[in-house]
Image 1 (cartoon, helix red, strand yellow):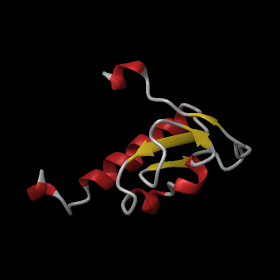
Image 2 (spheres, rainbow, N blue to C red; image 1 turned 135 degrees about the vertical axis):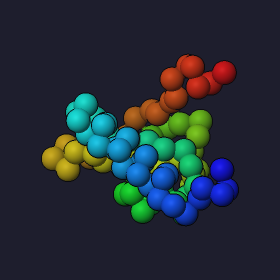
Image 3 (cartoon, rainbow, N blue to C red; image 1 turned 30 degrees about the horizontal axis):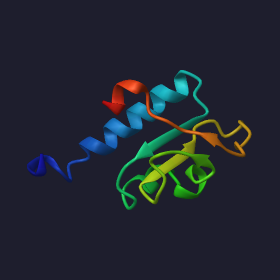
Image 4 (cartoon, rainbow, N blue to C red; image 1 turned 90 degrees about the vertical axis):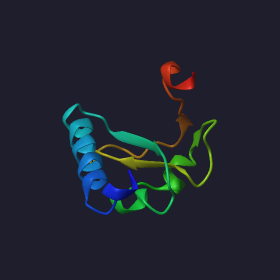
Length: 85
C-alpha cells in the first residue's frame, strides 16, 4: 500500500526472510524485483546472469547467503510450478 511505503516494513520482511533462509542452510537466494531496490540487500543481477532462467534481465537477481559456500558457476533457476499459474 502506498500509504505504508517508506516505513521500513518491506526492509524488515526481506531481512527476516533472508535470515530464515540462512537458518535453513540455503546458500543462494534469487529474487525477481525492482533493480534499484534489491541490491541494497546484496542481490546482484551479475550473479543471477550465470543462471539460465525465463526471468533473465536486470530485474532477476541473486545473492549468496553463505559466505563460505563456493560461488556457483551457473545452472538453471525456475520458480516452483505453483508460481507459474
